[in-house]
Length: 111
Length: 115
Image (tube, rainbow over all chains, first blue to last red; front, side, top):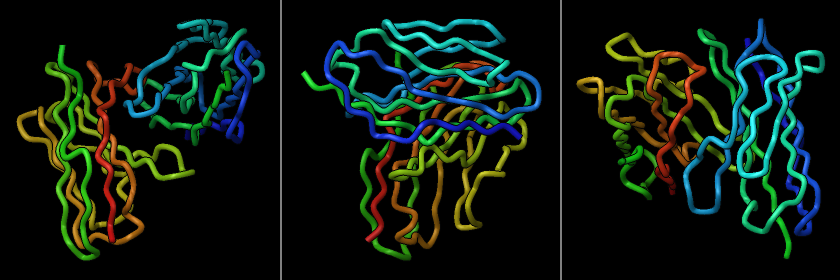
């Protein structure tokens, strides 16, 4: 079945630093891949997604590229802001196969 | 429009008591999911409803957990004889279509504390 592995956290960065959060997947076939974000006191919400190899999802300055050769969907942002402090979850799902979330990683951005 | 709502937002109960958690999905969404979010454990899939089909209960951790969805809309997650290890945030999500690849919209969660 599908599985998703995220890098361990938490991560603390200074404002304007470069961010990379790693996510790799194991799946039969090519799942759709998602990043969800949970801001403090709020519910999870979709940040970006990619449904096939080489697709790039982007939103709010974040990007992630679906790379089948490395089975990865790493989340990147060139210059983080304090308002990006949140918990980030990577998710993978096939059309008819069970979805799976990574364990989540807490990002704290210092002014 | 209205998003996914859950009630109560917080529930404190004593070990051994039963609890019911409610989820109102987005109108028109056919799929509904329940998850459990424990500290350091990420999101654990519990159960999935799609339309009028039999639910996928494969993620329920024990037979103390059950869920139903009435009229293809509102869902209730019931935990019987609660244990301290049931303490967690219970999240509900809905999606427009039947496929796991459809974007999920999450509710704010119910924080359950079992004393």
